[in-house]
Image (cartoon, rainbow, N blue to C red):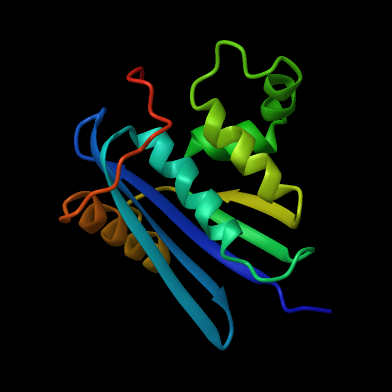
Length: 153
């Protein structure tokens, strides 16, 4: 059986909407990987969700046991409380970020994922690292275009 994987995620937006970024720390000792990217115009919620997606998409093997730590109630509650499945049944009608939620479900269903909400900016070392990665990405040069962002928050 493969070792469990821990993923910490965070998203940032310098204005909402505004330039944004995400940060991800993946850990499966002895391995550790950090990922981040920045976008010209996006929202905080999009970057929070993008961080989770990118973290899961980085996994090499289907069926991994994954624990995701996020300070985003938006993401954690949508999954943990099952709201996402109702949104999916209704074709995400009237919901924000349907492009990312569809992408999330595609990769989420390939693994055994458990979400844990953690308080942001509460001295959690890995969450703070993700925050620094996300902010640096949002403030970086050569920002990407968030093609799914439709101009509404």
